[in-house]
Length: 414
Image (cartoon, rainbow, N blue to C red; front, side):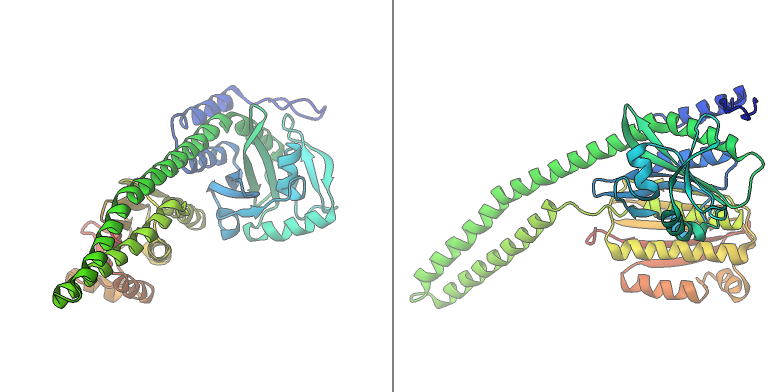
């Protein structure tokens, strides 16, 4: 590989180019932007040797939000969501000028620079001390010695940002920057296609919700109104000659009115777009942070038709996964962990399974009797699931390892 002492491009090896192409080819046809971003981040991190990589996307509400990451150890990076002033700050400057930027928090002078995507070398100063001091505070939770940002562009449009960093100095950081810059260019079509597919699906869902709302209003709504009006007229006529019948008719009128009120509430709900609480995304974030901290490989498996969940269900299942992963990291001596998320028409379940030494102490004895022993964290969560009509179990596998399973009935809640 050529040096860059003369400012010329640093050439990637044939093997590196082939790995880049293979990594991008593996994303083709995936229509979920979160999955594309997560797998792309994992591949970019492995190829470049940097400590953390994330792919973020600009939203319509002047924000940039993380879609997927690999190697994050902090909530700040894993759940990154930033309000953007276009042309201001680190991400706003990347978005407006389409420049790759480099920040080294402990370098002097403290500033943010552009870098050459062909050589990886630092170029012109772009942002001064005020912006650098602010960014230094932001990146501190990730303990970064280097932080870079790259635009992900396709046909002149910005489809995302690639963010990456190192916690310790690397022997050849410029080469990693060149490789990440090439990766950002190559991943753009896959990310754009997945985002467009998600947007089309959201548009189709919104149109279908509107159609259902109109149908309900024009059919069931009119029927209920007619029943109520007829019962009211009949009750007025029967008032003098059949008081008991009149009372029954008044009750029918009241029930029709109550049903109409419920229908109007349903129509309002159907007509409002719901916030898509992506439980799969949250579990992938938790698993990635767990693996980055512990060094234990983890995987997330999803089955069933994905759907948005109400906040209490979402928060409870996330809390179970977080506590189970904490216990694995602290006690299990596991080699691998698998998180399974399952949706069916009636229930949503989260299962965390490891191949470690099993339940510790008294919990192990309890499990041998078929009981569901757990620590204080899981005991508290079990009570929380009980209040929501759900169930939490823990059991030891015969060949070693532990399974923690949480299930919530979502038929009347989602």
